[in-house]
Image (cartoon, rainbow, N blue to C red):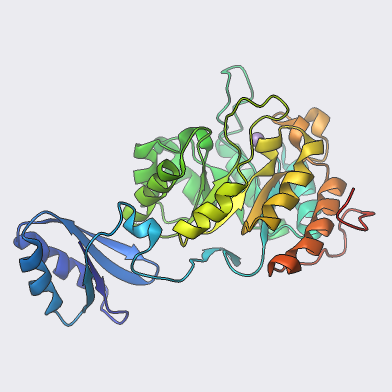
Length: 354
Ligand SMILES: [Mn+2]
């Protein structure tokens, strides 16, 4: 069961409620849902506890679990969550496009890409410092140096950064530098990592596992929320099917299905779904048309020399053209997309059809 505390409750009030619940024989924990304090418990005499708790001034509502995903499905709040990352809000009316290289390479290259995507309208920079690669011989990322390059790039370009934490050991190090921490598809059910990220103090971008059902994906998000981190953005990136024309099959239908079940924002990664740059724009346009709150797109200024995922990286001018196309789609789905500014790569986009 749950107790929702009043918005004006003093900090730490949930501890007093939790201790009372525990005294009555239940196992309880304090949670934070947005700005609200919540105490959740299992066990004990449900009626007796509910009666005792309802009498406390700080308690607004006592309610039972009507879902196995109470925080993700948000039975205590009907509104949609928006997740703040620096000065960016994901999940509002504005579409948020995150762009950048698969992996952080040298500093000048990272800055060049960041300037180009920022001018074209991207609101955040992506780039992996710790890379999960299929083979141990592939480029594994620059590690801490990669995080430093991202932070240096943020200082000159102003874009908040999202980068992946691969394991429990590196979470604190990544949190030191990143504005948002990514959980990769291969790590979606790394429950130790999810528990650690519940306490990391940074918003989390949770990619869907390549063979994960919606219940499993939302269950992973529930771990983050139950662990104390309310700032979670879901990311569909394609699932494994029998298809051979693309790296993965982008599950466009899941956007609406997930938005119906959870208040959390959902963005789409068309790059890892496509696996090939020519296929990326169509998937990106479709994702926005299907209701995504934003995109995360791989962009590289010299994809032929990229150390990771070069074949699926858009060149800066291709990214700018895609952004121009998305600006035409955005108002149709009730969204806005920031304008390109001076210094954006030249684009000849005249319409959605290419
Ligand atoms: Mn990649």
